[in-house]
Length: 141
Image (tube, rainbow, N blue to C red; front, side):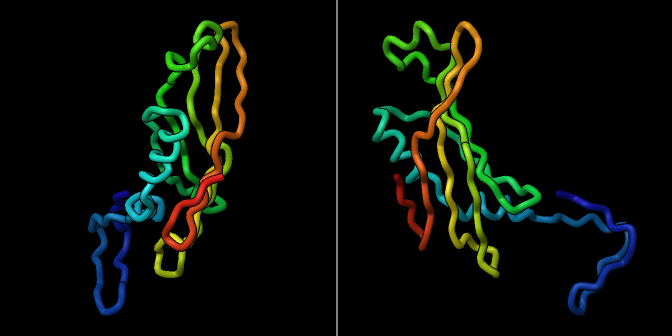
């Protein structure tokens, strides 16, 4: 995010003048680079048999940092259910990222939900995979 200063500020011995443009890196931006989701993608692909084209996007919210999960619909790969489903996709259903004092990721978890929408309207979802990041590695249940 970019901000224009409306007054001088001091950082250590340096003074940044009023009117200067500064870039502020958010915690979620740092986390996005620090947390590797490829093992999660690989685990999902091994369970369902194809790459679900899933995206993970950390986002700062009032209580901390959550993980937004989205994927393309893969209803065309759902066998007999493709006749009754309009969409079939992965999404997050609860998540959290905790940071160390230095801003690195301490631990994280995300519950991936399998969400479906019926052709006749309505829909639902169910827990599909819980992913836990601790000590630099992902585990799944």
